[in-house]
Length: 175
Image 1 (spheres, rainbow, N blue to C red):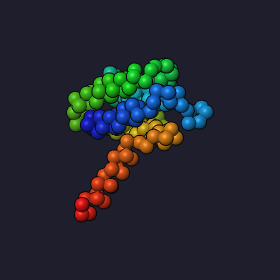
Image 2 (image 1 turned 180 degrees about the horizontal axis):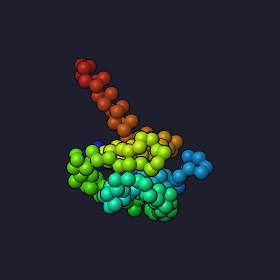
Image 3 (image 1 turned 120 degrees about the vertical axis):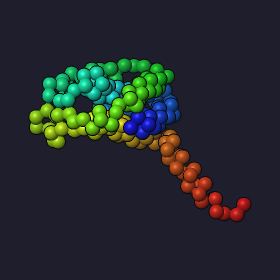
Image 4 (image 1 turned 90 degrees about the vertical axis):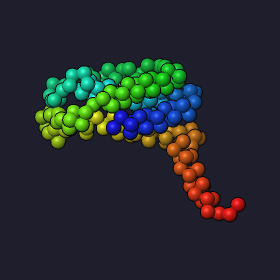
């Protein structure tokens, strides 16, 4: 789990590095996050799972104040930081969360957490819940890759795939 999370974060950091600082204020549409805000959002969201599973070690989410927690994240992602600080924040937050994930046991991941009344399903395993930050990050990374295209940047994963295809197509041809 930690290794796959690290891979996702590594790819997010590459995108953060490829987008020029001059474009960190870019918004693809009004009322959307800027590049900088989206990167900060990505870095901050795993803190919710950390709060639930590492700090409080909750077995129920009944009484967990989601609105207050999300409000703090939304406020913090508004910070106007330079690109170098945002990239470093992505790196350190990702390393910290992945380091914690490395230490959790299979038994811990199998524990069930009860959801508030009316939510479906009524409970989830910690594994399911701790997969959410990676899925969330991949969702926003897809948005960032589209933004890269809007800015005239071919995303690194696309460049790598095209290079593999080119290599495969020339591998069988005589020199």
